[in-house]
Amino acid sequence: MLQERTRRLEIGGQGKTELLSSLHELGNRYAHILFDDPAFTTSASSRRVLVRETTVAELGPIGATSAQIFGRARCVGLELCAGRDQRR
Image (cartoon, rainbow, N blue to C red; front, side):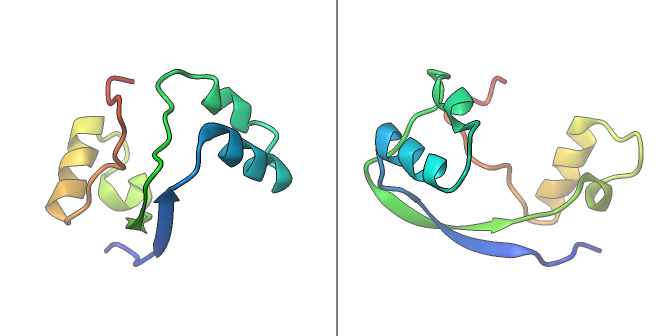
């Protein structure tokens, strides 16, 4: 049984410089590592998203493959977080 852990977030609306500055002010000393990757992009427009959090243990038995876990996630109505480059 999946536990219901959801959050509504507003994403986008800031450029890399502004967002990095905000994260540093909050104490995130490692954000620059993510920001240095050219695959990391920002969006000038903001939007609200609903994020549901779950654990691998809730989605598959010990030893399940990624494909099995992702398949189970789809069966219960979940999707992977969107990314611009899903090859990684």
